[in-house]
Length: 118
Image (cartoon, rainbow, N blue to C red; front, side, top):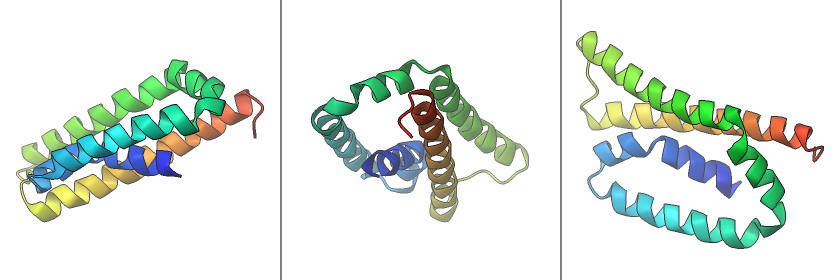
């Protein structure tokens, strides 16, 4: 579960940093915690992690999330409603975090089935 929480926060990182000036310090701390936990607790799941990182679907999700964020901000700016307020950035952060978790969950399910772990 911590993996999905971390991925959701990282998916929302840009807008969280825009909404709160000190968020970058928390995000860096969470990143370090994720690396430590991943290196220690996931030692037995190296095959799964390697399969997910090599998977073109994982890269497509990452690129798609960046494109979604940039596209959303550009479309809203073109419509005359740029995201500049705290509430706007928090709303986009929730959207991006939820989308990230959903896509990563789906990717993990497909990878589990491919490796016959589920």
